[in-house]
Amino acid sequence: MSALLFYQRPIPLNRKTHKDLRLKANGADFSFAAKTNSVPLAASEFYDAQRDYPIVFANTGEGVPVPLALLGLRQGENLFVAEDKRWEADYIPAFARSYPFVLARNEGADDFLVCVDETAPFLDKDEGEPLFTEDGQESEALRSRVDLLSEFQGHMQRTREFCERLAELGLFKEVTLQVVPEGGEPLSLQGVQVVDEPKLVALADDQVLPLFRSGELGWIYAHLASLRNVQRLTRRLARRLHKAA
Image (cartoon, rainbow, N blue to C red; front, side):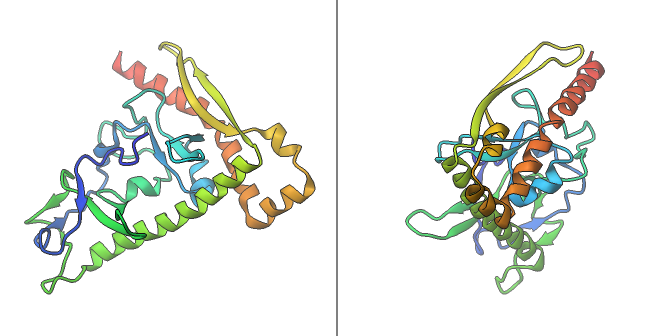
């Protein structure tokens, strides 16, 4: 999975280059995410996300598996973005809410750069909230977005530590999600990882207690409960197939 997903041309935000750039309210327009079938998810989002999405783990080439909110069962399809561009779920993952901004690691340094996708349809030079004030400072609109990015980045660091602990305990197992939507062909999603519940139950008390004290045990069970949403996602796909027929 590409870390940038729906970001087509992200470049570092620059006070001079982008001094006249404005951010129009995107309202309910999530068309930019319509072809993305999963997004990264912070563990702190599990309780909200588990009501709508299957939460799974996948390798991204960066070591341990990372959690994803599964948005679709076919490549290039987000079943939660409707024809009218609305996001049809109670909770919208923070990664999607952050668009068109994203943090990228500053090469050769330990900090991050704020980048912006220049192709975003709700960036404009005439309409919307300015990104910078006349004296070159961050506007309130931009500051609120940067705060969201920083908060999400902090949660993702905590999430990586959580995933490393799961890996150390040997709790990940790879599964193939097989579904048969009504009116459609059988589908298989490979390379997906989940927590192995029998192995979790078999952990020694001195291994479980730190998970409980840290709150990570709750995250694990939120993940396991979310897997029931695979069937809900299958029914959502079946409705879309029926509508397209």
